[in-house]
Length: 437
Image 1 (cartoon, helix red, strand yellow):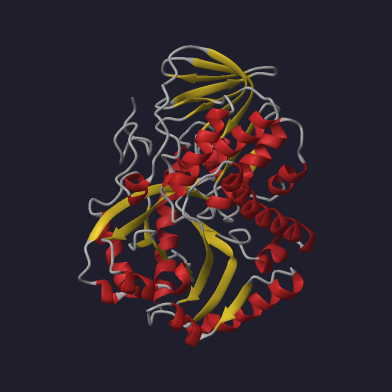
Image 2 (image 1 turned 180 degrees about the vertical axis):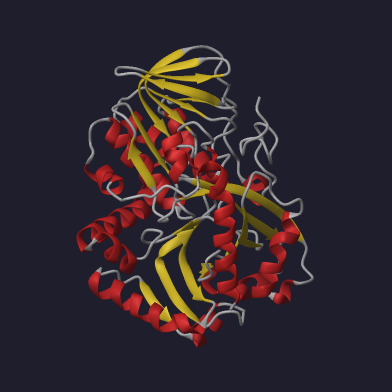
């Protein structure tokens, strides 16, 4: 087994990382690895939000599905992320209008809103207990962003008829957060936050109930695509299918060079404090909302169901995580909440997500029989779940919504595989300096 890639660089084989999520999620009974050759209608690589959502869509349509994962269901970014279910796309509507025109921007907004609803529908349909709470506060770390935020809120209210977001001035932000780090922002009650590992394992249980065959600890080596059959090869068995969905996100590796050229893995980190006194926990963020700030490398945080501050931020590029994640992220947390300086950091974990040059999902039909979806750029709880549904629909011939996302233009990262990570480091250094200045 190769040890020089992101699948195996930072975590034991087949085990969830030592996160607060893994410590508090019931999980799914471990599924066996593939040990023989099997056949199906559709093979899916990657048992995260995208792959499982697609599997549910296909199973409900009577399609025979085999789902493969190199580790466990939800082992990757789907089970490690900040848990925020946000409105809109990763790019705001103003930028989407400027890049793609008003009609496509509006169509992308409709799909983004559908992504939130689809997650809510799946939670309700499958009785998934995932600690969902409404509300996300977006805050500005620089005063000069205030007028832009106020104008953008007004735009969403008026032009997109989205009335669940309001502008917050400095006084309101500091009433909502026990922090002097921010100057203004917006409050979006149409967004929310949840326990992502509970959500994704809930999807998996629902898929198993619908007779989706899930094989864990089954790394895909490669696949061959002919006119009538896609053969997916693993270490100990092959899957022969009519169609294939590649849903690997940051853990794609070299499975498909076309996708890899436009979808880059990066690492992000989260810490969780010890359980805090309830009065202190409630004071940190009013009304139990989640928070994301305006830095290019975003800080995002919320209070857990057991009164811990979950704080995410900092990034790294390359295979290896920092040796001491807790210390690596703690400095960013104290920049927002210095009053937590004496609190123990109980958990610290990293995960690999995937970004694109334009920060929009890379959803493409690669051939007649193969499609791929990845590159959610930190906006994946809703969009990856919706993307799975769109891919599932496309695989049974329903392309309307899939084509809206597939029509988004993408650029490959410059420099190829050898140069793109160093170039990204230089770019991120620039934005880090800009954030500070």
